[in-house]
Picture 1 (cartoon, rainbow, N blue to C red):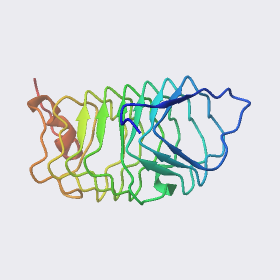
Picture 2: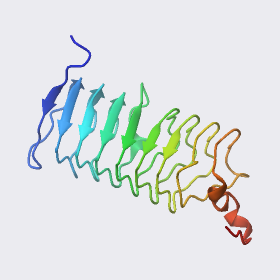
Picture 3: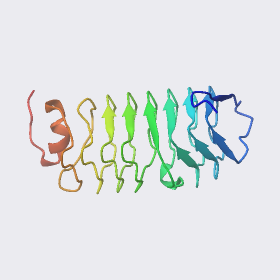
Picture 4: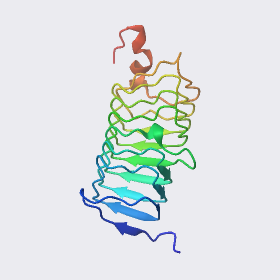
Length: 187
């Protein structure tokens, strides 16, 4: 099969996605909010303008998945299947989601809202946070080595409780690394 060929699938909010394996599929304008997507396998799929907010994704497999302009509010990514877990997010809303203890190295978060997202215990090494709002996101015992935060903002990352060796930050983001010390940083 041609690697650039995708099956396009359109799902309305009342429709359910059958349990199975979806490979090389393109989901456009689908509403999966509050749906049970447990045990479904997605491989090499693209989601455009979809709403998966508060969907149940217990043991769901996301292997090489691209989310663009999607609403993913309150998703418990920590309950996903670990095997081959790989995704990237562009212009997505992920507020109140959880990646607790997930091994998601090399993940790209671009132009996304990550407010109050739980990254505790996650391995995010070599990940890119490009122009992301990380207000009240939780980083506790998180592996952030070689990750790039240079264009992101509103984060609070304690260097003492997270591994940040060789992570990249801009001079404007230093406040997010030092805020726990209650010092004044003038720009």
